Length: 302
Ligand SMILES: Nc1ncnc2c1ncn2[C@@H]1O[C@H](COP(=O)(O)OP(=O)(O)OP(=O)(O)O)[C@@H](O)[C@H]1O
Ligand SMILES: [Mg+2]
Image 1 (cartoon, rainbow, N blue to C red):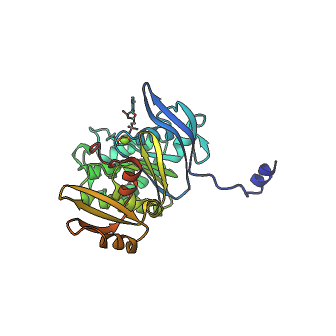
Image 2: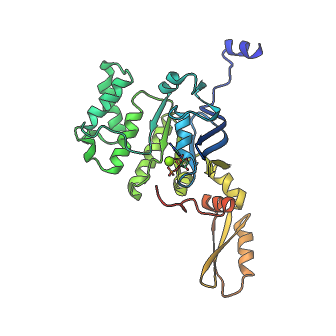
């Protein structure tokens, strides 16, 4: 009753961008995602960080209606993904992990096709396509066959296409995998620009530095489980902000974490003289290793 009154008076709390309740997705004998609970605020750049096979794509597929949860529920902008799929489609844009363009068409034709599928009126279609190609710096490539674009251009083109219907939330599944370092940084700038324009961003990555550089909050996922959640600095604080890296016997590396550099330096003073040691800021990789005992990229690149 109270909530109805508040709603009528316009005092209703703003919906979360994404809400995930007890999401589980099983494929026969594989549990890809188990009992995931998570909510994402409007305007966040949220990073889902984890190794190959952790369940990142499966989570995106459940959030975008491409995969039916085994149990649990997900909603986007207040719309239930299972019961209101059409409303959900209107407010989300999806850039899948793998390339999904019509290779026989040029970039503009691909954009046109997608615009028609989303019923974007003809009179505004061309202008919006031009604006988005400009936004991702692909104006000059608009008449080129997408097959002939570089890997970085293809990813940028997929982002432009996903933005055609002006979604509130965009899902980016491994937006920079396979891109060289310079192009990756340009992609980060593009993602930040998108965030400044008010779009909520949910991205997956297995690059630690990407999560640290871009995300306001990070969820670390491993074998279908969310094992840590927080801002990059909160997560680093969980292991200790300073790490001492030691080369022991010239063979293996040992890590010790400390609340701050002062404590780390005090520890280093007590080490035997044959142990080579450096102190550095702790990273999200340290968080992951401490929680799981292995590296994020241990299973190889995607
Ligand atoms: N359609 C499917 N059928 C059977 N098993 C699947 C299917 N999709 C995913 N899986 C399994 O679910 C688990 C999670 O896969 P998912 O693709 O979500 O991982 P990911 O974190 O996106 O990995 P990557 O970093 O390699 O993209 C894996 O063990 C995978 O083999
Ligand atoms: Mg994936």
